[in-house]
Image 1 (cartoon, helix red, strand yellow):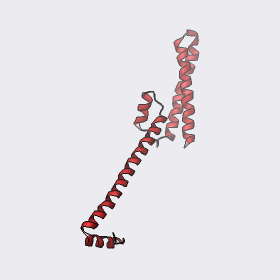
Image 2 (tube, helix red, strand yellow):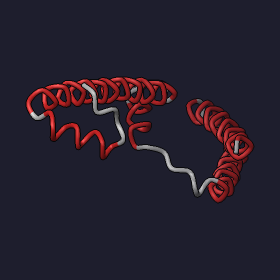
Image 3 (cartoon, helix red, strand yellow):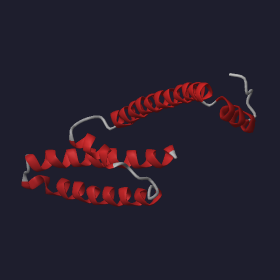
Image 4 (cartoon, helix red, strand yellow):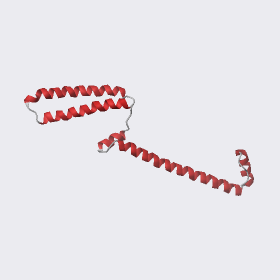
Length: 134
């Protein structure tokens, strides 16, 4: 899977460098630099074609929209993954706490029901295969 991204990354780096050089040529344009400008424009078109070819290899990859929001905000997109993991861990702890609370509640409920309805709870425990003694 990584080799798919390596190829795209390489083409994107070349494209960005070509755009940077194109910006330099255009910012200080002289008629004598027309041939270099044309060459850079052709490289840009070729670079876009190379990037488009990489797209076919990555058609099954989906990127959450939040990642693009991170990029638009000038934040590192790798922080998105880190923050997602942190949110998942926090939610996991929250759910674990709820499960533990429900287990304690069930235990206390069974104890109280055993005090109030001893015969019925003995039948219930016998059906579940538990020790009927309180």
